[in-house]
Amino acid sequence: MSRHQFVHELENAADHIADATRADLQVLLRRAALLLRNVSGLSLDPRTDEALNSLALEMGKAKPDLVETIVDEWLMANAYLPVPYALDLESAVEGNA
Image (cartoon, rainbow, N blue to C red; front, side, top):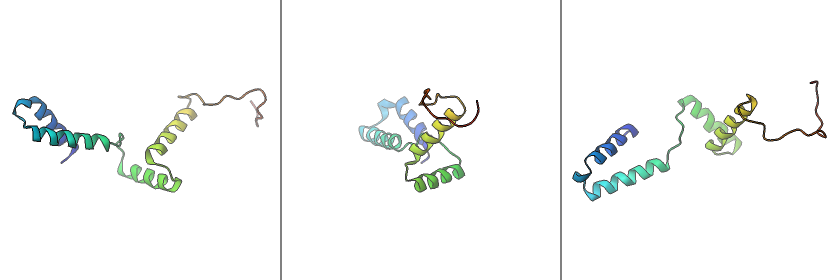
């Protein structure tokens, strides 16, 4: 059963709660809990997902941690997030300003 079919089934049960048996509600709630527990939270193209899985395995990181790192670094590199450290006057830097 697809996620969309299950959502429809949950909504239907909510609309007809008086007609649902305790056992049916218990099964629906357990399935809902299982789905929520296993939600990755991000739907990716299969090629992208495979590349992230491979990279996470290679780096020895969990895929959610890897995605968080990638997004954080991209946001900092593109000035959407502040850099988490500041240069002080004693810090050595190379190059020209």
